[in-house]
Length: 400
Image (tube, rainbow, N blue to C red):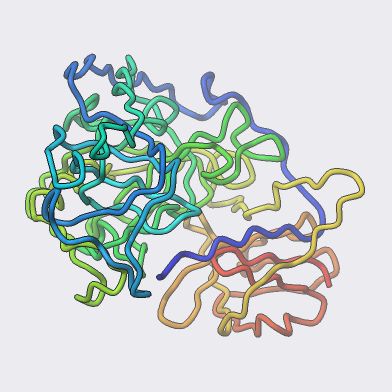
Protein backbone atom coordinates (compact mmCIF):
# COMPACT_ATOMS: atom_id res chain seq x y z
CA UNK A 1 0.00 0.00 0.00
CA UNK A 2 1.32 3.41 -0.96
CA UNK A 3 0.08 6.42 0.93
CA UNK A 4 1.09 10.07 0.91
CA UNK A 5 3.08 11.22 3.93
CA UNK A 6 1.16 13.93 5.76
CA UNK A 7 3.34 15.11 8.57
CA UNK A 8 2.30 18.44 10.06
CA UNK A 9 4.92 20.15 12.16
CA UNK A 10 5.32 23.57 13.71
CA UNK A 11 8.61 24.88 15.01
CA UNK A 12 9.34 28.28 16.48
CA UNK A 13 7.09 31.34 16.32
CA UNK A 14 4.00 32.25 14.40
CA UNK A 15 3.38 35.15 12.05
CA UNK A 16 0.45 36.47 9.98
CA UNK A 17 -2.49 38.71 10.59
CA UNK A 18 -5.87 37.13 9.82
CA UNK A 19 -7.08 38.32 6.44
CA UNK A 20 -10.62 39.49 5.76
CA UNK A 21 -13.83 37.53 5.24
CA UNK A 22 -14.05 35.39 2.12
CA UNK A 23 -17.74 36.29 1.71
CA UNK A 24 -16.79 39.97 1.57
CA UNK A 25 -13.59 40.21 -0.51
CA UNK A 26 -10.64 42.20 0.75
CA UNK A 27 -9.46 45.28 -1.14
CA UNK A 28 -7.69 44.12 -4.26
CA UNK A 29 -9.83 41.00 -4.73
CA UNK A 30 -12.28 41.48 -7.60
CA UNK A 31 -15.84 40.54 -6.75
CA UNK A 32 -17.22 37.28 -8.09
CA UNK A 33 -20.80 36.22 -8.68
CA UNK A 34 -20.95 32.44 -8.19
CA UNK A 35 -22.49 30.34 -10.93
CA UNK A 36 -26.11 29.35 -10.31
CA UNK A 37 -26.85 25.63 -10.09
CA UNK A 38 -30.02 23.85 -11.11
CA UNK A 39 -31.75 21.65 -8.53
CA UNK A 40 -30.33 18.63 -10.37
CA UNK A 41 -32.08 15.35 -11.08
CA UNK A 42 -34.32 14.30 -8.22
CA UNK A 43 -32.90 10.78 -8.36
CA UNK A 44 -29.22 10.37 -7.65
CA UNK A 45 -26.90 7.75 -6.29
CA UNK A 46 -27.74 7.03 -2.66
CA UNK A 47 -25.18 7.15 0.11
CA UNK A 48 -25.08 4.24 2.53
CA UNK A 49 -23.25 3.28 5.72
CA UNK A 50 -22.32 -0.27 6.63
CA UNK A 51 -24.07 -1.60 9.72
CA UNK A 52 -21.66 -4.51 10.17
CA UNK A 53 -18.47 -6.02 8.78
CA UNK A 54 -18.95 -7.40 5.26
CA UNK A 55 -16.99 -9.37 2.68
CA UNK A 56 -16.89 -7.98 -0.88
CA UNK A 57 -17.34 -9.71 -4.22
CA UNK A 58 -16.30 -8.98 -7.80
CA UNK A 59 -18.40 -9.44 -10.97
CA UNK A 60 -21.77 -9.96 -9.25
CA UNK A 61 -23.66 -11.20 -6.16
CA UNK A 62 -22.21 -14.69 -6.62
CA UNK A 63 -18.86 -13.59 -8.01
CA UNK A 64 -15.49 -14.37 -6.46
CA UNK A 65 -14.75 -13.02 -3.00
CA UNK A 66 -12.12 -10.30 -3.09
CA UNK A 67 -8.86 -11.33 -1.45
CA UNK A 68 -6.28 -8.97 0.00
CA UNK A 69 -2.58 -9.21 -0.73
CA UNK A 70 -2.11 -10.86 2.68
CA UNK A 71 -4.16 -13.88 1.59
CA UNK A 72 -7.17 -12.94 3.70
CA UNK A 73 -10.59 -11.93 2.39
CA UNK A 74 -11.01 -8.23 1.70
CA UNK A 75 -13.60 -6.99 4.18
CA UNK A 76 -14.97 -3.61 5.18
CA UNK A 77 -15.68 -2.76 8.79
CA UNK A 78 -18.93 -1.35 10.14
CA UNK A 79 -19.25 2.39 9.62
CA UNK A 80 -17.61 2.56 6.18
CA UNK A 81 -19.44 4.77 3.69
CA UNK A 82 -20.24 3.95 0.09
CA UNK A 83 -22.17 5.19 -2.92
CA UNK A 84 -24.81 2.77 -4.21
CA UNK A 85 -24.65 2.49 -8.01
CA UNK A 86 -27.63 0.25 -8.72
CA UNK A 87 -30.62 -1.68 -7.43
CA UNK A 88 -30.14 -4.72 -5.15
CA UNK A 89 -29.71 -8.07 -6.87
CA UNK A 90 -30.27 -11.49 -5.35
CA UNK A 91 -27.35 -13.78 -4.57
CA UNK A 92 -26.91 -17.11 -2.88
CA UNK A 93 -26.48 -15.59 0.60
CA UNK A 94 -28.63 -12.45 0.36
CA UNK A 95 -28.88 -9.37 -1.84
CA UNK A 96 -25.98 -7.28 -3.12
CA UNK A 97 -25.52 -3.80 -4.62
CA UNK A 98 -22.79 -2.44 -6.84
CA UNK A 99 -21.18 0.36 -4.88
CA UNK A 100 -18.26 2.75 -4.98
CA UNK A 101 -16.40 2.48 -1.68
CA UNK A 102 -15.65 6.02 -0.58
CA UNK A 103 -11.97 6.78 -0.05
CA UNK A 104 -10.84 7.42 3.49
CA UNK A 105 -7.85 9.39 4.74
CA UNK A 106 -7.36 6.89 7.59
CA UNK A 107 -8.62 3.48 6.41
CA UNK A 108 -7.49 1.37 3.48
CA UNK A 109 -8.83 0.31 0.99
CA UNK A 110 -11.20 2.77 -0.66
CA UNK A 111 -11.93 4.37 -4.04
CA UNK A 112 -13.04 1.24 -5.89
CA UNK A 113 -16.23 -0.46 -7.11
CA UNK A 114 -17.33 -3.84 -5.72
CA UNK A 115 -20.44 -5.83 -4.91
CA UNK A 116 -21.47 -5.22 -1.29
CA UNK A 117 -24.05 -7.17 0.77
CA UNK A 118 -27.27 -5.19 1.21
CA UNK A 119 -29.26 -7.81 3.13
CA UNK A 120 -28.38 -11.19 4.63
CA UNK A 121 -30.14 -14.40 3.69
CA UNK A 122 -32.61 -13.89 6.54
CA UNK A 123 -33.48 -10.40 5.25
CA UNK A 124 -31.46 -8.52 7.87
CA UNK A 125 -30.12 -5.24 6.35
CA UNK A 126 -26.41 -4.58 6.32
CA UNK A 127 -26.69 -1.02 4.94
CA UNK A 128 -28.25 2.15 6.33
CA UNK A 129 -29.44 4.11 3.29
CA UNK A 130 -29.42 7.90 3.01
CA UNK A 131 -31.09 10.14 0.44
CA UNK A 132 -28.93 12.06 -2.04
CA UNK A 133 -27.94 15.54 -0.91
CA UNK A 134 -29.93 18.51 -2.18
CA UNK A 135 -28.12 20.64 -4.72
CA UNK A 136 -26.93 24.05 -3.50
CA UNK A 137 -28.17 27.20 -5.23
CA UNK A 138 -24.72 28.44 -6.25
CA UNK A 139 -21.29 26.96 -6.89
CA UNK A 140 -18.67 27.92 -4.31
CA UNK A 141 -15.95 25.84 -2.69
CA UNK A 142 -18.01 25.89 0.53
CA UNK A 143 -21.11 24.47 -1.21
CA UNK A 144 -19.44 21.98 -3.57
CA UNK A 145 -16.71 20.46 -1.39
CA UNK A 146 -19.05 18.73 1.13
CA UNK A 147 -20.93 16.94 -1.67
CA UNK A 148 -20.04 13.44 -2.84
CA UNK A 149 -18.25 13.41 -6.22
CA UNK A 150 -21.35 12.01 -7.93
CA UNK A 151 -23.52 14.77 -6.45
CA UNK A 152 -21.09 17.49 -7.55
CA UNK A 153 -21.56 16.31 -11.12
CA UNK A 154 -25.30 15.82 -10.67
CA UNK A 155 -25.70 19.40 -9.42
CA UNK A 156 -23.19 21.26 -11.59
CA UNK A 157 -23.22 19.22 -14.78
CA UNK A 158 -20.43 20.07 -17.18
CA UNK A 159 -20.87 23.86 -17.07
CA UNK A 160 -17.80 26.01 -16.55
CA UNK A 161 -17.50 27.11 -12.94
CA UNK A 162 -15.38 29.78 -11.27
CA UNK A 163 -14.92 29.95 -7.51
CA UNK A 164 -12.34 31.09 -4.94
CA UNK A 165 -10.47 28.60 -2.76
CA UNK A 166 -7.25 28.09 -0.91
CA UNK A 167 -4.88 25.48 -2.35
CA UNK A 168 -2.79 22.69 -0.84
CA UNK A 169 -1.44 19.22 -1.56
CA UNK A 170 -4.06 16.66 -2.64
CA UNK A 171 -5.49 14.58 0.18
CA UNK A 172 -6.98 11.39 -1.25
CA UNK A 173 -4.69 8.73 -2.72
CA UNK A 174 -6.39 6.92 -5.63
CA UNK A 175 -6.35 3.12 -5.55
CA UNK A 176 -5.73 2.92 -9.29
CA UNK A 177 -3.39 4.43 -11.83
CA UNK A 178 -5.30 6.61 -14.27
CA UNK A 179 -4.75 7.34 -17.92
CA UNK A 180 -4.38 10.25 -18.60
CA UNK A 181 -1.92 10.22 -15.70
CA UNK A 182 -2.75 13.76 -14.58
CA UNK A 183 -6.09 12.48 -13.25
CA UNK A 184 -4.07 10.77 -10.52
CA UNK A 185 -1.86 7.76 -9.98
CA UNK A 186 -1.49 5.71 -6.83
CA UNK A 187 2.12 6.74 -6.26
CA UNK A 188 2.12 10.12 -8.02
CA UNK A 189 -0.34 12.95 -7.38
CA UNK A 190 1.68 15.60 -9.21
CA UNK A 191 -1.29 16.49 -11.42
CA UNK A 192 -3.66 17.23 -8.53
CA UNK A 193 -4.24 20.15 -6.18
CA UNK A 194 -6.59 20.24 -3.20
CA UNK A 195 -9.00 23.19 -3.05
CA UNK A 196 -10.78 24.10 0.19
CA UNK A 197 -12.54 26.85 2.11
CA UNK A 198 -10.18 28.43 4.70
CA UNK A 199 -13.08 30.10 6.52
CA UNK A 200 -13.61 33.81 7.26
CA UNK A 201 -9.87 34.29 7.88
CA UNK A 202 -7.99 33.42 4.70
CA UNK A 203 -4.61 33.13 6.44
CA UNK A 204 -3.19 33.21 9.94
CA UNK A 205 -3.88 31.35 13.20
CA UNK A 206 -7.66 31.62 12.74
CA UNK A 207 -7.66 30.17 9.21
CA UNK A 208 -8.11 26.53 8.26
CA UNK A 209 -4.67 26.09 6.80
CA UNK A 210 -5.05 22.65 5.22
CA UNK A 211 -7.95 20.64 3.74
CA UNK A 212 -8.54 18.25 6.62
CA UNK A 213 -8.97 21.21 8.99
CA UNK A 214 -11.65 22.57 6.66
CA UNK A 215 -13.49 19.24 6.85
CA UNK A 216 -14.23 19.13 3.10
CA UNK A 217 -12.21 19.67 -0.05
CA UNK A 218 -12.00 18.97 -3.77
CA UNK A 219 -8.90 17.25 -5.09
CA UNK A 220 -8.86 19.00 -8.46
CA UNK A 221 -7.06 17.62 -11.53
CA UNK A 222 -4.71 19.84 -13.50
CA UNK A 223 -4.04 18.89 -17.15
CA UNK A 224 -0.56 19.42 -18.60
CA UNK A 225 -1.63 22.42 -20.69
CA UNK A 226 -2.50 24.33 -17.48
CA UNK A 227 0.26 25.55 -15.17
CA UNK A 228 0.04 23.83 -11.80
CA UNK A 229 -1.51 26.21 -9.26
CA UNK A 230 0.74 27.37 -6.42
CA UNK A 231 0.20 25.79 -3.02
CA UNK A 232 -0.92 27.62 0.09
CA UNK A 233 -2.34 30.53 -1.93
CA UNK A 234 -5.89 31.89 -2.25
CA UNK A 235 -6.90 31.34 -5.86
CA UNK A 236 -9.68 32.09 -8.30
CA UNK A 237 -10.11 28.79 -10.11
CA UNK A 238 -12.01 28.01 -13.29
CA UNK A 239 -12.85 24.48 -14.40
CA UNK A 240 -15.55 21.88 -14.87
CA UNK A 241 -16.77 18.44 -13.96
CA UNK A 242 -17.26 15.95 -16.82
CA UNK A 243 -14.28 17.31 -18.73
CA UNK A 244 -14.17 16.07 -22.36
CA UNK A 245 -11.06 14.02 -21.56
CA UNK A 246 -13.11 11.84 -19.20
CA UNK A 247 -14.62 9.96 -22.14
CA UNK A 248 -11.30 8.24 -22.81
CA UNK A 249 -10.27 7.83 -19.17
CA UNK A 250 -9.19 4.41 -17.92
CA UNK A 251 -8.03 3.23 -14.48
CA UNK A 252 -5.83 0.19 -13.94
CA UNK A 253 -4.33 -1.50 -10.92
CA UNK A 254 -0.90 -0.12 -9.94
CA UNK A 255 1.94 -1.85 -11.78
CA UNK A 256 -0.68 -3.93 -13.61
CA UNK A 257 -1.01 -6.36 -10.68
CA UNK A 258 -3.88 -7.00 -8.28
CA UNK A 259 -1.53 -6.72 -5.33
CA UNK A 260 -4.08 -4.75 -3.30
CA UNK A 261 -6.79 -7.34 -3.74
CA UNK A 262 -8.95 -4.84 -5.64
CA UNK A 263 -10.98 -5.80 -8.71
CA UNK A 264 -10.12 -4.86 -12.26
CA UNK A 265 -12.21 -1.75 -12.91
CA UNK A 266 -14.82 -1.80 -15.67
CA UNK A 267 -14.18 0.83 -18.39
CA UNK A 268 -17.58 2.43 -17.70
CA UNK A 269 -16.68 2.85 -14.01
CA UNK A 270 -13.39 4.50 -14.99
CA UNK A 271 -15.21 6.98 -17.22
CA UNK A 272 -17.71 7.73 -14.48
CA UNK A 273 -14.93 8.30 -11.92
CA UNK A 274 -13.20 10.75 -14.25
CA UNK A 275 -16.48 12.55 -14.96
CA UNK A 276 -16.80 13.16 -11.23
CA UNK A 277 -13.44 14.96 -11.11
CA UNK A 278 -13.11 18.75 -11.21
CA UNK A 279 -10.61 19.64 -13.94
CA UNK A 280 -8.88 23.02 -13.69
CA UNK A 281 -8.86 24.97 -16.94
CA UNK A 282 -7.43 28.23 -15.55
CA UNK A 283 -6.60 30.08 -12.36
CA UNK A 284 -5.29 33.35 -10.95
CA UNK A 285 -3.65 34.03 -7.61
CA UNK A 286 -5.62 36.47 -5.45
CA UNK A 287 -3.93 36.47 -2.04
CA UNK A 288 -0.44 35.24 -1.25
CA UNK A 289 0.72 33.09 1.64
CA UNK A 290 1.22 36.09 3.95
CA UNK A 291 -2.37 37.26 3.45
CA UNK A 292 -1.56 40.08 1.01
CA UNK A 293 -2.39 40.58 -2.68
CA UNK A 294 0.25 39.14 -4.98
CA UNK A 295 3.01 41.66 -5.78
CA UNK A 296 6.23 40.50 -7.56
CA UNK A 297 8.03 43.46 -5.98
CA UNK A 298 7.07 42.30 -2.48
CA UNK A 299 7.25 38.46 -2.53
CA UNK A 300 5.67 36.45 0.26
CA UNK A 301 6.87 33.43 2.20
CA UNK A 302 4.84 30.54 3.54
CA UNK A 303 4.47 31.15 7.27
CA UNK A 304 3.82 28.97 10.29
CA UNK A 305 0.15 29.62 10.93
CA UNK A 306 -0.36 27.11 13.73
CA UNK A 307 -0.22 28.77 17.15
CA UNK A 308 0.26 26.20 19.95
CA UNK A 309 -1.74 26.77 23.13
CA UNK A 310 0.17 28.10 26.16
CA UNK A 311 2.33 25.41 27.72
CA UNK A 312 2.22 23.16 24.67
CA UNK A 313 5.60 22.03 23.34
CA UNK A 314 5.73 21.33 19.61
CA UNK A 315 8.66 19.32 18.31
CA UNK A 316 9.81 18.38 14.84
CA UNK A 317 8.40 15.07 13.62
CA UNK A 318 10.35 15.10 10.37
CA UNK A 319 11.07 12.17 8.10
CA UNK A 320 14.30 11.17 6.42
CA UNK A 321 14.68 13.03 3.15
CA UNK A 322 17.25 13.32 0.34
CA UNK A 323 19.20 16.56 -0.17
CA UNK A 324 16.98 19.66 -0.44
CA UNK A 325 17.43 22.20 -3.22
CA UNK A 326 16.17 25.69 -2.43
CA UNK A 327 14.36 27.31 -5.38
CA UNK A 328 13.62 31.04 -5.50
CA UNK A 329 11.74 32.86 -8.26
CA UNK A 330 10.20 36.19 -7.15
CA UNK A 331 8.00 36.30 -10.26
CA UNK A 332 5.98 33.29 -9.06
CA UNK A 333 2.96 33.48 -6.70
CA UNK A 334 4.82 30.87 -4.59
CA UNK A 335 8.31 32.40 -4.88
CA UNK A 336 10.21 29.96 -2.62
CA UNK A 337 9.93 26.19 -2.68
CA UNK A 338 12.01 23.05 -2.21
CA UNK A 339 12.97 20.50 -4.86
CA UNK A 340 14.18 16.98 -4.12
CA UNK A 341 15.82 14.51 -6.54
CA UNK A 342 13.42 13.47 -9.28
CA UNK A 343 11.85 16.94 -9.47
CA UNK A 344 9.42 16.46 -6.58
CA UNK A 345 8.31 19.66 -4.92
CA UNK A 346 7.79 20.53 -1.24
CA UNK A 347 6.54 23.67 0.48
CA UNK A 348 9.13 25.78 2.29
CA UNK A 349 7.65 27.21 5.50
CA UNK A 350 9.37 29.91 7.54
CA UNK A 351 9.16 31.39 11.01
CA UNK A 352 8.77 35.15 11.59
CA UNK A 353 12.56 35.64 11.72
CA UNK A 354 12.81 35.30 7.92
CA UNK A 355 12.13 37.76 5.11
CA UNK A 356 12.56 37.64 1.38
CA UNK A 357 14.74 40.25 -0.28
CA UNK A 358 15.35 41.19 -3.92
CA UNK A 359 18.47 42.22 -5.84
CA UNK A 360 19.70 39.61 -5.35
CA UNK A 361 16.73 37.41 -4.55
CA UNK A 362 17.26 35.62 -1.24
CA UNK A 363 15.63 34.56 2.00
CA UNK A 364 17.41 36.08 4.99
CA UNK A 365 16.96 35.67 8.73
CA UNK A 366 17.23 38.36 11.38
CA UNK A 367 20.62 36.86 12.28
CA UNK A 368 21.91 37.41 8.74
CA UNK A 369 21.88 33.77 7.54
CA UNK A 370 20.68 33.55 3.94
CA UNK A 371 19.25 30.99 1.51
CA UNK A 372 19.74 31.49 -2.22
CA UNK A 373 18.38 29.89 -5.37
CA UNK A 374 19.68 26.36 -6.12
CA UNK A 375 21.42 26.09 -2.76
CA UNK A 376 21.56 22.44 -1.66
CA UNK A 377 21.05 21.64 2.03
CA UNK A 378 21.42 18.42 3.99
CA UNK A 379 18.02 18.00 5.70
CA UNK A 380 19.55 16.15 8.66
CA UNK A 381 22.25 18.72 9.42
CA UNK A 382 20.53 21.89 8.29
CA UNK A 383 22.72 24.95 7.88
CA UNK A 384 24.67 26.89 10.49
CA UNK A 385 22.19 29.28 12.07
CA UNK A 386 19.13 27.55 10.58
CA UNK A 387 17.23 24.53 11.89
CA UNK A 388 15.24 22.43 9.41
CA UNK A 389 12.32 20.12 10.06
CA UNK A 390 12.13 17.86 6.96
CA UNK A 391 8.44 16.92 7.01
CA UNK A 392 8.16 15.43 3.54
CA UNK A 393 5.73 17.70 1.69
CA UNK A 394 6.34 20.50 4.21
CA UNK A 395 9.86 21.71 5.09
CA UNK A 396 10.03 24.10 8.06
CA UNK A 397 12.89 26.57 8.54
CA UNK A 398 13.56 28.25 11.86
CA UNK A 399 16.43 29.99 13.64
CA UNK A 400 18.93 27.45 14.97
